[in-house]
Image (tube, rainbow, N blue to C red; front, side, top):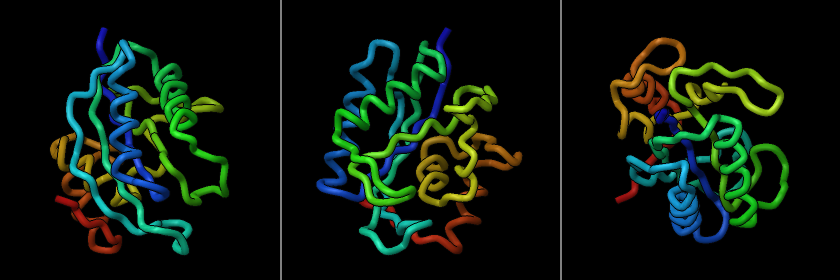
Length: 161
């Protein structure tokens, strides 16, 4: 059975666009994953640690037949392949992949929480998510597009062409 999931991708080190593009290619190479839609790239201000370079962010909608823990492992493997080095929390990184949503599942495990616990406070997640799934109901019960509009009032997010 195929499940629709959403993955947030971000980079603020090196060639940010190339890092995200390569991560998407590596996702698509996995036989259990099909990348259906990818939002535009967005240039975004660091939210929690402001003294670092701007990020590029996007969100991908995928169909998968692998379970959420295997999908998380795939995301972490891609980060390693793209040489993400351990840094301080919310610090600079070559690539970051976050499992945002996995179908309608709610998961609270030591290694995985879905829906992603901070996705609804982040314009850098909600703006690209709203681009590809505007009517999607997100945690809290509102549409992705409505929450994105609200968050964009206070957080810098610029859509790149």
